[in-house]
Image 1: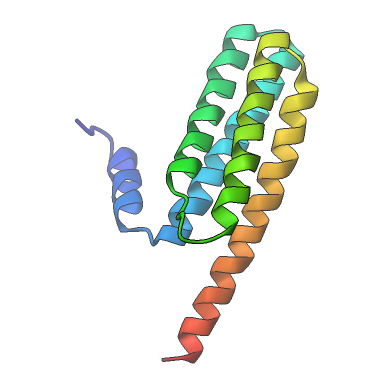
Image 2: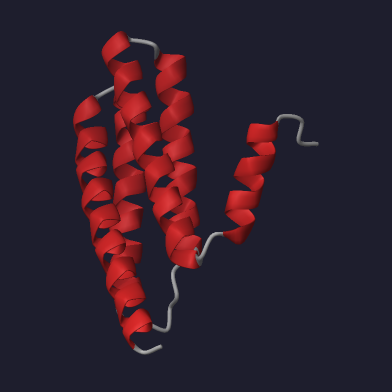
Length: 129
């Protein structure tokens, strides 16, 4: 049950967001979780590290689930996502921030690419109206 107005707002936002916006929201969450996991490693708070790196893995699993296999790029993205999950597992097991920082770099680059693609698609749709 949703209690707070903020939670109701978040639920409404998720239910009404276009697919491109949902994808960007996933990336934003994953980026935030990875940053918090890295912070946990730096603080030697390994419970925090585990919690946030596992949440980041869950986000990447959602990105995998969202892939449309009808497009050839989906296979490449799947390989990248699987690599990122392995790196996050490694960072979590070894409490080494370097693999997590590598994944953070990829997530930031992919988010930027999807944002540009979404803006381009929206501009094209607007021109065709």
